[in-house]
Image (cartoon, rainbow, N blue to C red; front, side, top):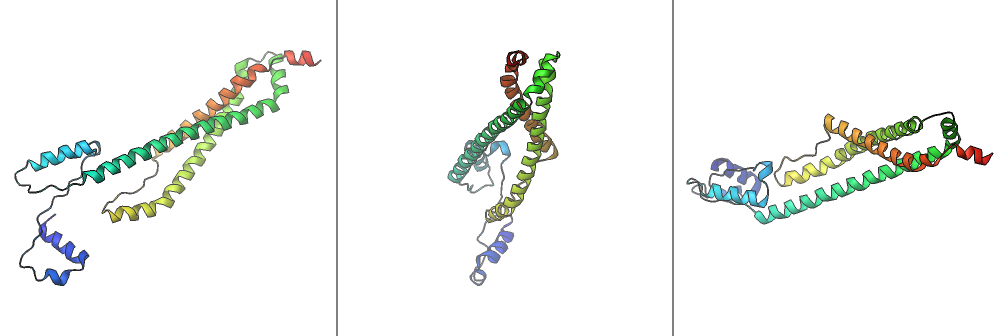
Amino acid sequence: MDRDQALREFRASSGLADALDYLEENPLPHTLLITPEENARSAEGVAGLVTYIEGMESVERVQIDLGWLQRLNAMTDLLARAVWALAILLAVAVVLVIGNTVRLSIESRRDEILVAKLVGGTDGFVRRPFLYTGAWFGFGGGVVAWILLQLSLWWLSGPVERLARLYHSDFSLDGLSIDGAFALIIVAMLLGWLGAWVAVKRHLDDIEPGEIAGGG
């Protein structure tokens, strides 16, 4: 940033325009703002960058708040782990809920399953509709999750952008891309299929045609 531009910005934002008129010369130096690359924003990477810049002949002073950066990185790492833990818990919940739903469906269609096995239906033939049902439940859950995510980002984007402007940052929340949305739905379908498979494996194998003979 040019020193004259820096003075103009300081004059406009500080409220000291009258006092600055008494200065004989501009006391502000030329300033170069550097934004590290994504893979160099750790405390060690920034410290190495500071050492490199300080070695330049035309640089008089390098200013960086490493303590603030370390706190920010620690908070970001904590939030990332919390998000992963929440995602894992939600994935387990999806598997359990869909598995329980498919289990209830199996119990309600017990007689139909017994008849299908009695006339020669294989386990794969009997299992297939329940796996499809679990995948469809997962698809619906994925679509709902994407809609809720978009609504949450829309609701949070205003406060986040206002907070970013206080730190002179252009940070903003971006929603999932098309590839990300497809990945979310596919993962949800796989979780639904997994939940259905667990329920089918656990309960369908216990249903055998011998139950009809025993009941008769």
